[in-house]
Picture 1: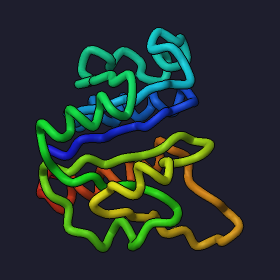
Picture 2 (picture 1 turned 90 degrees about the horizontal axis):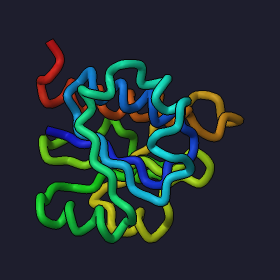
Picture 3 (picture 1 turned 135 degrees about the vertical axis):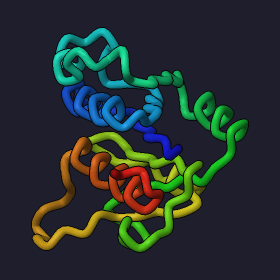
Length: 153
């Protein structure tokens, strides 16, 4: 099953909303530190409501720790970035893909983008808008992957 990875997330309510989406879809959520908040943050908990017991949450203290786990399990790293090579709608998702999203303020770091198997962007019509909210981007990417893989009923 596709997995969601947040690299250095900064805003607790975004991560809480993403956790809620992951709970609803039985999708693993990997948080890669350092985080811009404590896991016990009340805004994080509030955004996730009472769905936290259903979140398949994995905390990694660093990119190196996460990457070691990825190497054990395999699968492609799909980096979501405004400078992606192609639209997220144009790739064929695979069940063992890891969907990577960077922090709300800086996105994915260049060194991480460099090792991604693929980089994708979410098309936006208005050029003056730099990016979408992180939780919206995760939902769009995750649901497209699930649609392609036949997980939507």
